Image (cartoon, rainbow, N blue to C red; front, top):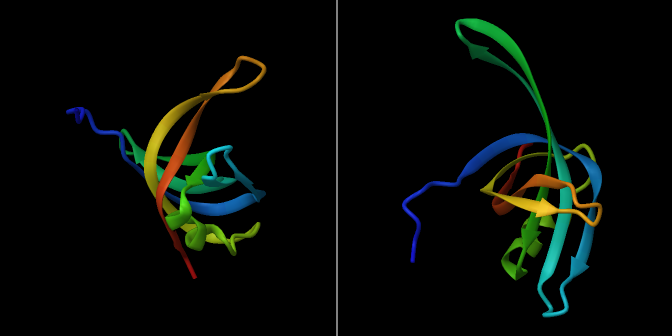
Amino acid sequence: MVSPFMNQLVISGVVCKTPKISQSPAGIPHCIFVVEHKSMQVEADLNRNSYVRLQVVASGKQMQQQTQHLHVGQALQVSGFLNRHEGRNGLSQLVLHAQHIERII
């Protein structure tokens, strides 16, 4: 069943932590990295600095090509959906599950 609710995010920024490559026990490749976004946004007719660091998970063989040469300082645009991940310490965080990654030159 498909939910009637939308969960889609597009963000551009710079890779700010070295990507970590791993593989699940089922053989699914994963690449985990952090994107840092800085911009000026308008809110209530006023300028506001926006600063976000967001963990990104790119899973599956189709994502391997999009992540194989990522490096710290690489500018990119990532689109996907947000999901909650709970760490071993019990704290939760929002994580962007990438569905498309485009390098910005």
